[in-house]
Length: 136
Image (cartoon, rainbow, N blue to C red; front, top):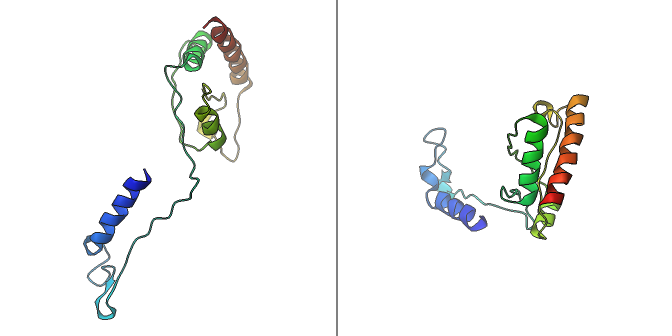
């Protein structure tokens, strides 16, 4: 990924005067001073990685079934975020499935909340999940 990003930066720098600008006098160059603008990309050495839970894992299949069992339907989805410690666990070979039972519409909001009925269902789902994993 780093190499690909750097290739984009290199391409932009090679064609810096062809970039969109705010008119003929802002082309990222100062010809009289013999100066040309450049773009630099600086990435942290330990950049945060995202994770992707395996849809073929025992954990995911068990959780998916448990959710359908309790709620009648299971519609898994992904949200962007960074969980570096979770990625380390996944890299170590652990089967990870992440979940939450709060209201996604207020996730990380100023007044984040949940419904007790959703937490009750969540406990039932976790109970069924454990049952499913034990049977797998």
